[in-house]
Image (tube, rainbow, N blue to C red; front, side, top):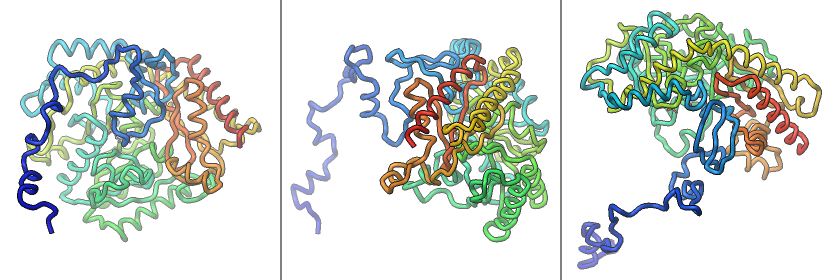
Length: 485
Ligand SMILES: Cc1ncc(COP(=O)(O)O)c(C=O)c1O
């Protein structure tokens, strides 16, 4: 029976505006508390007015960024070993990149791609296409975020193969949209409570010892063999090759734990894809743009992807992403199926062109090689030092400046469940504690994966002295955690 009757029902159904008292109407001149007020607390405002759905490492309010440092609204200078999760590869506000963006702002900011060609986009592509990992990747679609680009790759694979299913890696991360959350298998939190997610996604094994429950010194060949065997099973038990459009992987598993895909695994995937008319998609959103010591991580193996996905470092902080494939594959999509209001924004394109120029002019990849050696040297020395802190380290791995540290005998649980683990009498993971010790010492560092892993992703332009400082802070932080255990 209805709760409302007669006049009460009419009142309840009346348009909302009838019931809103005029005093609660908003005047255009009304404003929220202003940032210049001496008592204004931006973090408290953020806590109140920005969705709780965003997990946050610190409560700092970032005001300024230069190179490897960020300064907060309270004047705290933070050493940034996250580069905004692998975005500011040339450091914060690289002058050449910022200047190129500012100049573009005075020319044209929105050169809409469904209406005409964008001169800024064409200028970028003339620089970008020659540095892609294979000459066959000569046709591009630009978008805004990494997740959008992954979705574009999925649409392309489906249209090009006329098949539907997608195989992803266990431990993968491809984004948080409905399609990419379905493709993400690094932690349940990215899809939890948001189902049903996109169907047609099947996960197969990635050659990472921890995911097999094996020791860290398990030979790579064994892990590759096991993983390729699992792929065979996936194709015979879960998704038939005739239904499978693509296999997608990150050449360095990112959110899954900073684990490089061994070249033999990539060659194995290529072979399976060729045998069955399946497209191989490399998601280099995090591993691309110099991060691993080459422009793209897949270059190390020499394997040709059918589709490359890129974002993050391409524009050093401006939102830009894209996919590249062969002209033949790309042109199997009908005009109108791709596009988007902000696809390949002109300002972001101008910034990206400057990024490529800086890579050349400042020999950024040489710095990646030198700083990578410095970081690996420090971490391995610490691991082998015999100290209590060093003994906590199980494994140091990665490529270039995409470096992971895994801790010994960790509780295999998601960080979000750490509190529950402690309540049950467990110690919880080490990585999140080290991260907080680093934050206390004004350094930003991230953990990753359900395993107990820390990741170093500093700007690729980091100096020797800055890296030394980062190592010192990390060493002190790990020691502080070791003392408490
Ligand atoms: C490998 C990979 N793919 C896709 C994404 C999603 O990118 P975005 O956050 O820009 O949507 C990320 C983000 O971290 C990523 O690391």
